[in-house]
Image (cartoon, rainbow, N blue to C red; front, side):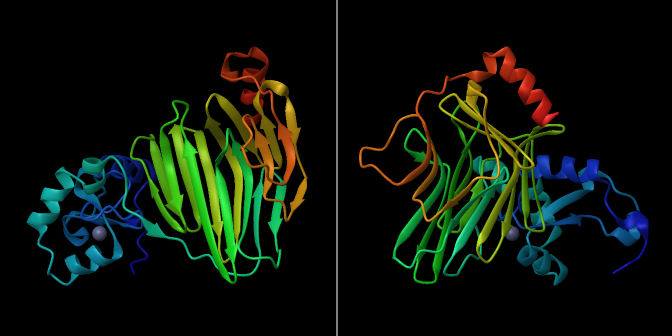
Length: 279
Ligand SMILES: [Zn+2]
């Protein structure tokens, strides 16, 4: 590795490259990737977004070994895998263990029950679990559905396999944290996959069917009811916070909020609170 500080690609250029490449390897769509200069760095010694592309570790290695020709990279760079599909490929998450935990807006949702299989849903809106863990004798499976304000799916985690839509303005996976932005400095979701058994959401605007949950730090605000939830601990409950329509078969629930007004962004009061929470 070179210690040349100029070698670091500036954040703005990284974002331009991510957006142009559909937030994944241009060859296979994997959300795990490196920024790769199509022209050799030693020759150009400058960062130009158009000359940089995204390659997953495997395709990066194929390029370095000379098996993946530059002509093919350039072809896919013009028509990246994820932009053709409108979504990324799936990448695995590595969850396991006999207990699990969500920390969402400073509220803790914990499961260490010895009855198997067991499911924990920290937040459910109109019968849809936004997040869930299934614990089954050492197997721990994370699932999630994250929507935008038009009920379009932005992020899907299906039993430890993660993929996202290419619609958002920016999506970035750094270390264990995935950040989805609606626009500059507007975070839709900041989620940390603290494997082997923990998920942390410390900033988010969770949306579904006109219900809006705002999360920042240790605060969780639900709808325009001014429900501020903080420092609650939910343990071995099937559902932590249930909002809106109830499931036909009742499940053990911590907090039930049945009558939350929809399309809360129209509320001046909520706009004020949203501005305060999300800046
Ligand atoms: Zn690839």
